[in-house]
Length: 285
Ligand code: DO4
Ligand code: MG
Image (tube, rainbow, N blue to C red; front, side):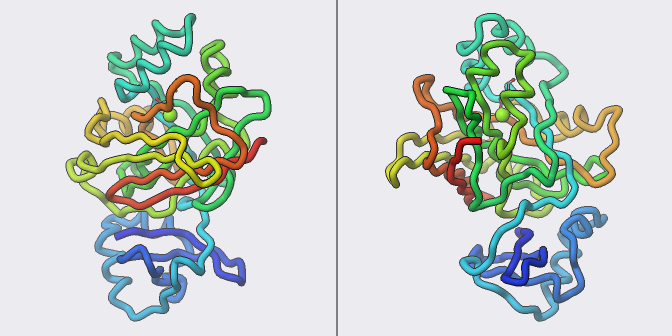
């Protein structure tokens, strides 16, 4: 079961369910105004299934405007959780190579703040590359949607857009490389309460289009993620309070070659087999 937030012409944020990726059942007609209400419930799958039994109006996906699939969740991100990412970071930075090498094997994962919910870019809207970066890349990542009790209530697709030259210059520049206008995209769907063993079978694919033609394609599997969902969410929630829940991007396993940088007008398409496709054009910010 996949949930989303969307708008029609009246501009009101609505919550929807899709069973076929083609139509969206409008839950606002059942009085559900916030996605958080469903994700915070004790048994979101049961609640959504019950709501879906009520006859409600459905809209064609082509006629809706997607909103970020969160209302007030903070967005955080884990890093260096795939071998491919560890190698890329060690290659990009002389002074930080040792730090990346160590964190991959350490008990405590790298976790950093990524975005406020209100700054998240939804499916279809533009992600940004910094005007002061010459080497920017998308990072396609499985994103865990965690409720206020620290439980994984769903999964969505994330893009942790990053300025690798800024990150590589000095590890202390990480917040500037990672957290800026339009640097985080999420969506379009939240798959409700997936089992980790099922999600680990999913493939993650990324395609970058320039002038409509692919200039990069890459693929990995969630199974390559070094750390378990519980391990990552437990560390995120240690000595923390998320009154509205949090999203945790789980790290990238796909890294374009070092001579590749995103450019204005590119389109980034990320597909996760159990979830769907998150697509965003690129602008300079
Ligand atoms: O410290 C580097 C960030 C790593 C990251 O974002 C990733 O591995 O996805
Ligand atoms: Mg990342």
